[in-house]
Image 1 (tube, rainbow over the protein chains, first blue to last red):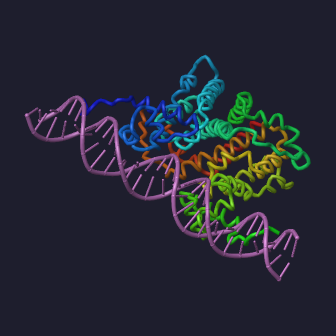
Image 2 (cartoon, rainbow over the protein chains, first blue to last red):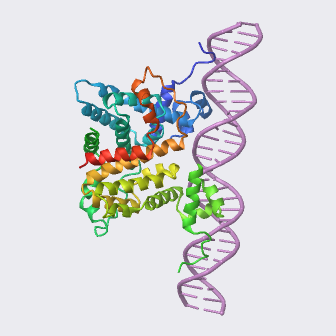
Length: 193
Length: 193
DNA sequence: TGTTTAAAGTAAACATCGTTCAGAGTTTTT
DNA sequence: AAAAACTCTGAACGATGTTTACTTTAAACA
């Protein structure tokens, strides 16, 4: 048994509160401490620094998407990847402000290794799995980025200067949607086989 | 003519210095002011706030990649896209710490519109051009992310738990290379036609 | 030409941030 | 019963982005 007094907060509860604060727009050590009923200094008993909290959240979010979707024997390989990718997209876009942190720590955490291994089981060529990860994480990152910055920030579009963009403006404004995500992923996967 | 004293620094020089500081690891208003020979408060005469400086840099970097590569009549369409993508990759990876800002402001700046319009000229389907942008920006973002965090952070890899990952570890460790970038882009483009 | 007006810049402060540290309190180990 | 290891508080430190008077400069206007 460890010496000293028992923790007054579960470490997971700290991460819960931290994710809440990220969703609300700003994760600060003081706000986090207040929310879990501690002093800022006490947080450094739980995690060495703020960055450790963020990467822990990133790994936990990565773990929320059901990895077993990649091993479902009832589905063809491409469908398994689509299912997992859609699940991951849903998990991450529920916390768009946390997505940049995931991109940064995408390949360091323990969960990322597990995702990579499972992907390799479906798509045995490492270059192909990396290409898929690039598309999936890239699409999620772009979509998350413009959810946090308040989308459509006064679109000044001159049809004379940007005729093609104007012509398909309806498609472009809908680029952040599950359908387009899935459409692009389907094309990427077909290009990889 | 505008009233008051002349500027003692060209606004572009402020952006140059700001990009230098980003490359060195930390862009601070105080450090930026010192570098251009001003007081922190004076910077707010040039830009409304720090975020404006960052997005201005993002747009300027986007402008550094030669857009005319997309219109080169001597090359087939897919080759044009590859050439521009490789050029953009080189420009952005020269400043990896600035890349997250570009992802964030990717579709707000004036230069981003120009890139989109040129892309549409060679790949007329908006969904396809968006898929290409996702791949290109995603690959660059992932590569930039692990250049700033000092790559290969003590890779503890258990071959029994991650057999497939271990088997292709050499490919995986080389995932950040122009060849793999181009390989994946080729597959994406072939899937789109 | 002399006065007004707007802009550039300085100096100093404000509020907030992550982080550290000495000490008080608590629990297990010896 | 004493010692050691741990949690937590309270207060501080240094650095950050930004704001606010105030001075100086130079164009615009009478």
